[in-house]
Image (cartoon, rainbow, N blue to C red):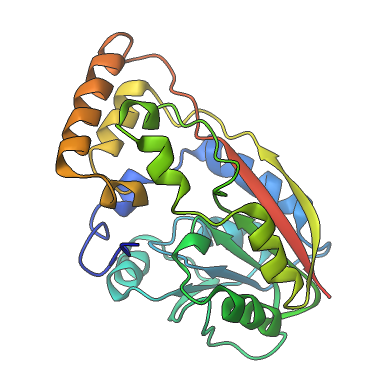
Length: 252
């Protein structure tokens, strides 16, 4: 399977292409608050922090955050655009987290788990870094229960190609429970609308979703032609948010 190289692609546009509205971020922080340990401040890890989309808001709500990101370019963007006095960004990966044992109260992996190469090693490394009783929150797709994403239906083989990027849910759960984690919750998250259809089309043109690296040029061209016709019918209507699920674990 082709891997996205964020040092040569997407890093310039990712922050714009995947930007969240204030309302969306507020909803995410509320969902995280319900899943995290009680008490504040909490020391957090944002593993696969990218351009720092979530780290500053996590820090403002819960306490100091360390963003872990393997891409040099993505970290550069985070350092220039997503600064916060309680956030630091470090070179690392889910398999190699450069923090002391049991130093974090929680970790989040938000649309980054499917990029991890050695998933059993990553689950063990996360268990090492998070204290007993700490939490792990994952937002990901799962190959055996992919959600309906409105824009993806316009691309040839869109749903099928997207599904193969993600492991099935039972496999993810087995990976983590074998590494010292126990499942706490799994369920849907209702995200507010990201904006109008026109605004979403403009962001999608930046191609900052992993799936765009797996379409052929012909499939991409066909998909955008279909998508543009569909959006033209009502460009200023609010677009539906992409369905999301949150899977949370507790460190045993």
